[in-house]
Length: 262
Image 1 (cartoon, rainbow, N blue to C red):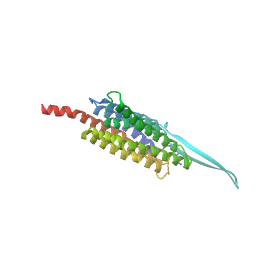
Image 2: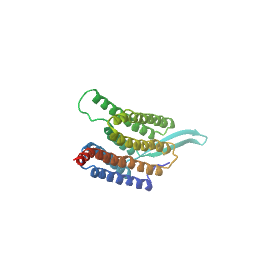
Image 3: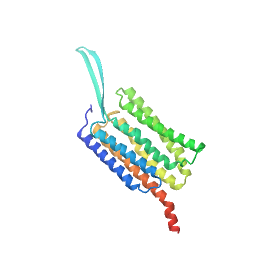
Image 4: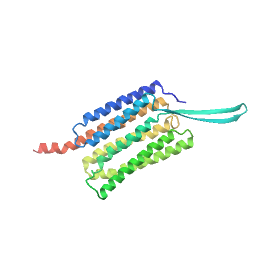
């Protein structure tokens, strides 16, 4: 039973803290002077929130021991079977805030800005609300599974969480991708690059969950924390920098073209 944070886990959590903090600063610097500053702001807060939650976990404040005791009568008297596991619940607090912000950053690349009321505006709001809502439920139901020691409950919640994950994928690969294509080749190219990276990285999370201590326990908590840290840094800092530099390059392209034509 993994019920105590080890020095290896603590080291990786401090790496995550420092990496997210430096990533937040890097995004502010790289995104300086952007015309569309909301991409810079959302990407900064993705890393800033993650840095705070990694700090919480590194200091031993972001975990909880989930335990269950079963009593049984034996020939020798009453026997007790106790099962327990350490759950880093702060991960889920991180994800419930940062993954919607990541998605908003992706969605605002593809979807045209709201210029007034009308049906297109309502459709855009409805689409974004559906994606963010499914994403939040994906994280919460994953947390419910992580806190369950009963196998039936655990894997029921895991399946429900995967269902919401597939709903998110269906929407960002379907109508949102079509909206990006309608805005032109440059927008479609940036969106498809970001979409591909995010999809590959996000597929690792449920695989790691099922293999880790919250699932089957195939890999140790030390390995789980290390891999989660690396994937988190890539999905937040790496994705944020790609988003900000891509938008900045795209926004500056027309001005550069006009200057060269003159």
